[in-house]
Image 1 (cartoon, rainbow, N blue to C red):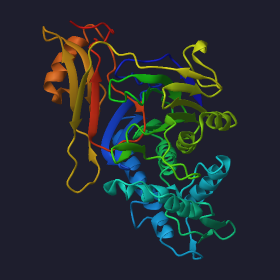
Image 2 (cartoon, rainbow, N blue to C red; image 1 turned 120 degrees about the vertical axis):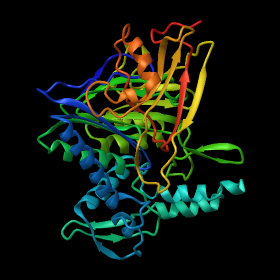
Image 3 (cartoon, rainbow, N blue to C red; image 1 turned 90 degrees about the vertical axis):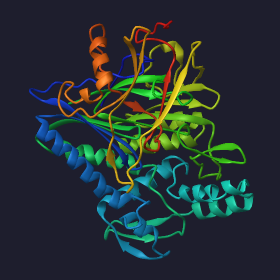
Length: 450
């Protein structure tokens, strides 16, 4: 795995660079409502037909894996196991057994900060917001008693698994990473696909002959075009970000994180953003959740003990901590054991736009429509593209032209600026369809406009 640091990026949209392989070309696909969020798929493929086949294969494999790991689908293999009675034995697929074993390993390695039964705490807290009352100490203690016991027992000789607790369970903290790894592996097994970049809701897997430049969203300015914490160029690796910037709930006017500490039963607040880079998405996904729960120094100690794993953490007060070998722009900005204060620098002007893409009536996934948001100066010249959603089905701007006004203006922009306007951002998972765009009043060169 290679992580090459290219310097902090404050520009809105990112350049995604791909390794050339003979006559292979880049193809990009976007879908909404995939695993409850958005999917970006980039493939380095021999031709359009191979890319289309890869898209179909990826979606089919995601559906297959969801039928194993999802706790939202009552008919999934995992949901059927959760519905069994304590003491009941079930025959389980090797794919689900493997993930349950990984959960046991991460629970042990994190000292209990990772626990699939944390869903029981989420259930307890989220049933109360309408009443405006927090759960009682007695209710939290009773829930923790259910959590503090094994939830299954795996017999490796037979593959049978026994349910050993009645706690509500979820694989949300690991399943997305596992799915990213397995989809990437299945696509690379095709002789016509040589590189894959998968981004599902901000968790990213890069594999094969491809590289991606990735921005890490600032949790206090995570709209498109907002401040970024760092930028990485990733090849053969994964990156995941966990935090509470996109999802929270409210009780009596107070916001609470959707992430809970299974050791004390409380929503966590000290770490508002935890980004992890690792060799595989399963590890990145799991460790990002763990780092959102553990105290900063505990997180750093754990990550520094793991081979090929690094983290970038931000506290509620805005301090930043980095693991020992996290790629950084400047050695003066911090080490693995120090916290560095940081603040978002804002100009005198800021414009915020929110827009929503309508969901399909049947709640199935759907292709993201083309959307462009840009700024023109007083003469009508395009000085800043704030956001661009598109499906690039062929090299070059064949389908961009459907955004007629943006496309015409972009031809003017290209006369002076040959920038790739496709973004890849690692950030906490968000719900599909709702987007925020920020503009700081500057043009593409960072100069303030009149």
